[in-house]
Amino acid sequence: METYNLRKFVYFSIILLVFTFSGNIFAENSYEKKARKQYNDGLTFQEKGKIKNAIIKYEIAKRIDPSLYEPYYQLGKIYVNEKNYDKAEKLFKTVTELKPNLYLGHLELGHLYFETKQYNYAKNALEKALELESNNFGVYYYLGNIYLVSERKRTFYKSAGMIC
Image 1 (cartoon, rainbow, N blue to C red):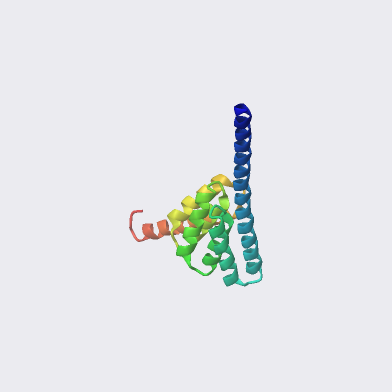
Image 2 (image 1 turned 90 degrees about the vertical axis):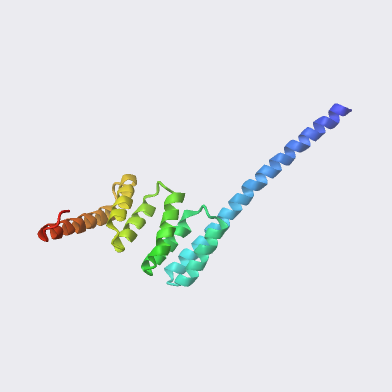
């Protein structure tokens, strides 16, 4: 009789563990689905030019699932367009932390640094993007401009008699 109760207890415990574990999986997928829904709504608003609504949806998506990199990326692009470079930089850095092998995060950081004339940072970010995606025209475009600016500075310093 005791072995029957022990088996029953063990079976019940195993079933309970399986349901508990599978419940967590479903909960995680539920969070990701909810975050993706908010993100997709944000994209729709952004396409319609309703930027404030898009920002709200992206922020909600970030809160629901902080590991989803896409809302950070889209918010960064919005803030670059609004010339709010500090916010954009933080967002793109988060993208590169969440997805270090995604060249887009590094490319956008490079673009941002180029726009703010931080050419050394831009060069580093763009070289990382190039390492990850060697066939991207945007990377070559910004790197070429950085080298052009650097060469002009060098020429200016030399003509002014300064050592560079």
